[in-house]
Amino acid sequence: MKHLAEKLRRLEGVLSEEKGPFNLFALFLREDAPDVSDLVVAAKWIEEDSPAALADISRRVRDSLGAEEIIKISRVVVVDRTDPSLKAVASAMSLEHGIAEVANSTFFGLAICHAFIITANLNPPPNKVLQRTAAAGGRR
Image (cartoon, rainbow, N blue to C red; front, side, top):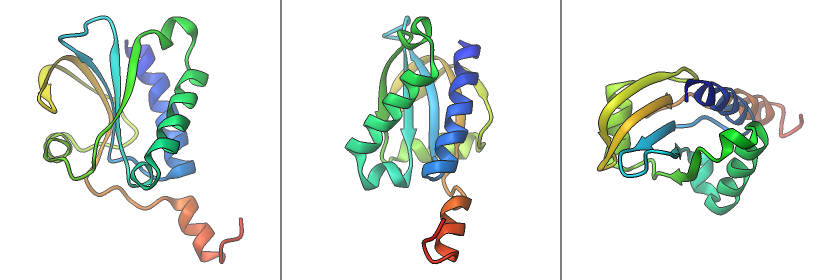
């Protein structure tokens, strides 16, 4: 599972650069579904067009993983940035583009056997690419 988390960490970095920063990007192995994990995400840019963002993230996850890895992810779960549980996770472990491993915890009211937190940040910095684009008057 660590190898899978590392591949997802790289994907999170790419998506952050292209789309904007995440408040949460984590892989949760739930106690009630011990063979598959949930990819849990939250970001301002996801909330702006959730269906399109979810489709893009799902496609990018499929493209980034091999067949034996993709079957280990059951779903992508979008969490609202105002969810108090997100605030609790980000307050407990603030990190960006890393990997923190957590075992036997409760997140979002669910018993989690194992988790890899890649980014948990209440106030992520603005996206540098978007800043440069705005400063250039919208030109790339």
